[in-house]
Image (cartoon, rainbow, N blue to C red):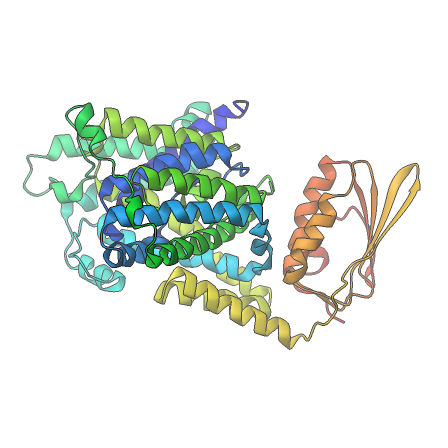
Amino acid sequence: MFKNIKSDLPASIVVFFVALPLCLGIALASGAPLFSGLIAGIIGGIVVGGFSGSKIGVSGPAAGLAAIVLTAISTLGGYENFLLAVVLGGIIQLVFGFLRLGIIAYYFPSSVIKGMLTGIGIIILLKQIPFFVGYVQPKGEGMFEGVINSLVNVNPGATTIAFIGLGILILWNKVLSKKGKFFQLVQGPLVAVVIGIVYYMVTKDSSSLGLSSKNLVNVPVPEDLDMFLGQFTFPNFAVISNHEIWITAFTIALVASLETLLCVEATDKLDPHKNVTPTNRELLAQGTGNIVSGLIGGLPITQVIVRSSANIQSGGRSKMSAIIHGFFLLISVILIPSLLNKVPLSVLAAILLIVGYKLAKPALFKQMYDLGWKQFVPFVVTVIGIVFTNLLLGIALGLAVGIVVILIKSYQNSHFLHIEDQSNGATKIKMTLAEEVTFFNKGAILKELDKLPENSYLELDVRKTRYLDNDIVEILEDFAFKANERNIDIKLVSERGIAENPSSYIEFFKLRPKTA
């Protein structure tokens, strides 16, 4: 478990500094105690990280649930009543996992998942601009309104250290990280945060460059153990017969499971090592985490793409990076809350701007456009839906458009593959794809490919295939990486010719679905 600690430890530090402001911000947006967000972050790292089968996924409080939490606290008559719904929601997630409902993740097209990542990236960029320039948004101010108002209410001190932090991050990422092991171990975000603390201490008496308490992290500072334990809130089991509690619990379970499964799919696509997360086990881990979080006063937990992508981009290799980041959150809350309260929010915003940009690179729009309208339209609809409405509605709109696109292709084949096992020395397997293969077939294809034995020979026949979805091409691309590790030789037979162990399926099919 500790064999990748040289990669996981630096990554966990980055995830910690990304998670800290998100835990606090999501709690604030949810109308819940700020400490509840930190509890969810700690449980998401230590408990969910320990039970999860994901090597690079990170769990914690999710922005997508903030609106549900805000409404539920008011509707259910108090935070203690809401916590019971969180516990029951976790139990329902355990049932989902035992019923093996994790397969739903395979029924979302790649274009929608990439649109989700891009939409979240754009929202991160927009929401961090006010923090970056030191503008304190009044309660109830919208995202776009906040961006516009922040541009005419710039705080010189906050903006100065934000640009310094951004410069450090870019320098570290582009230049210094390639100069030696020291710069790989000591990550840019950590240096930016330390410089931010130093800047605050040096300029705190300056009227022009100093930072007010509103421009700094604000976590509770307990004076003793009793005050620390007093921050925990416990569920009110007396209202368990209230049907609204159960409705909220099911809503939390359903939405949290869907967000988690979509994040798992997206995270696995970002993973350079092409690990595959067991989705049913992930539901069990998330359910366990939500039960524990609800019992001690925490917000609902999901696997979250921002922290997961930060983990991947920082070189995380195993679940230890997620677990260690949870311990960092716990240690920081106990030992150094006063020091954390000296970190400028604008520096944390600079870190998140980098994360947001990596998720929503302009080059991705061109890449999706080059794949054709069948990929580009659902992608754009998902992005626009997420940015202008909310996460779930945006995904639903993108999925609806994706289904319409598939229906236009009029696929009807239910049996899309045939496997022939001819044992003669090495196992030879022939797989013939059907006339039309779409993203709905991802789950079954992945299952069959994962079952292939080591040291075997696969003949993949696509001569009869008239429509091959880009999602399936990506699956074959990812499988080529695994096949090399498992000593599986692949012979690709198509109307374009025969290819032995092709290096790139995307290039072979010319970056677009195969058509007649």
